[in-house]
Image (tube, rainbow, N blue to C red; front, side, top):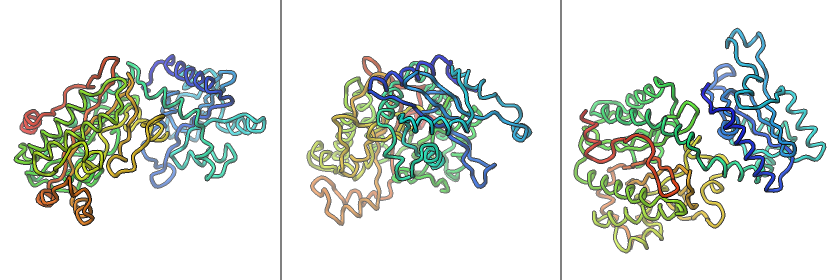
Length: 468
């Protein structure tokens, strides 16, 4: 089982308790792990993925475990059940709960049945039970039963102090965590280069997706998220892979592998089917790459990520003006939200154990925080990260151009941002598709570092991989 040393998890739990005490919290912290999620009946489950906060503070990747921390006396108890003979014949021998606890530096263990009784006693005594807002139905049901809450009460009862403490700790990546992300990126590089070589006329998209996932599995990994591999790149999260490639179109390939411990990678490359970028494809590709290059260069401690997003948007509006798609002042166009005619999403997000790191804890708490309010404008409101960057943050930088026929038609009918947008040009290139280029960046004490091995990114290098 892949884990950090026990001392890592002990230090994380101690830091969590210290932050909670500093915030004036007392009582218990309950961190439930995940249970198996049935695919179509109980014994045929989806591949198990542990809750990331449980994984961060405990490291154990088995189902049906729960972590209970006592803020007042500093103790930690791992709840779980040892297998009996009925399970043994199906699974073979498995480590006991005590053996698993030792791997995480936990001395106390108890059964799952005991957990309910402990929580009931604590509630009767008037002690607080801190838990994170759940995002899985099974966890919601368990919390409701343990804590005597109706489902409608659960979200409001989640602990604000615990949420903010967990975000603060998980946001700053240690050297070991960064190494895990780079470990994942080595496999991700091979997956992307394989896709470039396979993207040829006559091949069905699913064949290439399958080859990439097979490569990840051959390295003992899983995908960090379902692959976006599509010749309809203007559809931002298109997971249909049924199209047979014709030649001449562009493929947006947004695919990343996990590390053995579960840390994500998140890389996007745009591939010309047939091996060459032509005409407008080449011009827009170079524009997106320029926007990404300038945005990466702007990453530094203290810089609000919102400013990096604004920079990428302005660079692309200026380029789209040169190509005849936009007009007017670039800064004014971005402020008004007119850039969203071709760039409908944000420039990036936090990354770690989750590909959109910690967003299950609350996207605004993770990405915005004090002093930063989420925009209500189309496009700008999809920016997941705005807050000032800190050393140890890992972020993605992923500008793109997406010419979406349905969006163009709607905005044109409404006359929206007509002073900035040349709708005739968008109509002329309604079938263009999309381009995205994405890399993973570590914020360092004095700037930034691009993580992982080089993955073909310039037009020359991408075309060379396609031809290899």
